[in-house]
Image 1 (tube, rainbow over the protein chains, first blue to last red):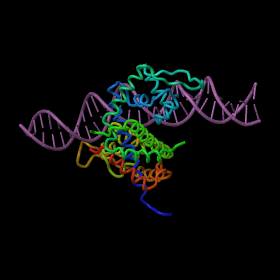
Image 2 (tube, each protein chain N blue to C red):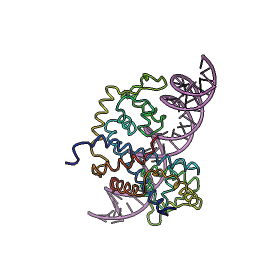
Image 3 (cartoon, each protein chain N blue to C red):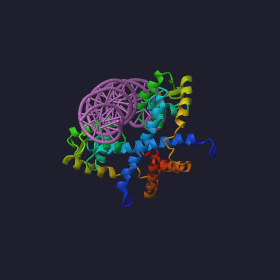
Length: 142
Length: 142
DNA sequence: CCTGAACCTTTCTAGCTTGAACGTTTCGAG
DNA sequence: CTCGAAACGTTCAAGCTAGAAAGGTTCAGG
């Protein structure tokens, strides 16, 4: 009513497509680097997010997925001996995920690979900062 | 030479996470609206992109997925009587996807639902334009 | 004409993802 | 203390996704 009567929808659909396209581009980037280490893309994403001990729920949040999916991915990582499910020190409901020695080593190699040929190389450092601010504002926070 | 020396890697990982998080947020938005029409999220995305007759490859590109996946999704839409695979007028290798009357009607209702409660409501129109420019530059074009 | 490279689509397999249901544990209200 | 609501993680079914392989088609060169 106040202003901008009728052109939001078209651009918005394009915008969603662009976000999705870039996310896909990032996922592809992770996929090929992960394959070089015998990992799938979700497994690599999980490993990348393991900056320290996490609960399943925390990992799921970092991966932007459901907890049931985190269970699936961690199952695979555990079978490969990269992470361990330990008892949580203060909450018996929760698990404490920790990297094994192998997991820590593989994660270091993964981070090296992921740092090469960034999927965001088309943007300058300043533009990346700008993008980060916009995205932080767009993402719903709870 | 290729990149700036100081703070690229840490912020970049966060940036990728933000892009993925927003894409997930958009997908969730589509999912709930689509469910109200008896569609899944990928089915709704395909329907949304059917602005006119498309080949399977063109649809896959618009959905940012592999052609084999487009085959899967179109199979479902075809079973529901929403789209038809016709012969392509000039290339016998390709299929010509067209919406049925039902498909056209359902697509109209879908677009209405998707226009409500935008997942990008956290940004002003100006910021959305800014975001669009950044994303267009970031997405690899072939 | 013919041949090979490239393209369009489909099939198949293996893996990913969600949502609902479930058992366990925690926490606060009465 | 006891009860119920809520949280954590897992299981299961149904559906999505990529990648490799294969059949048919197009096109450019020889």
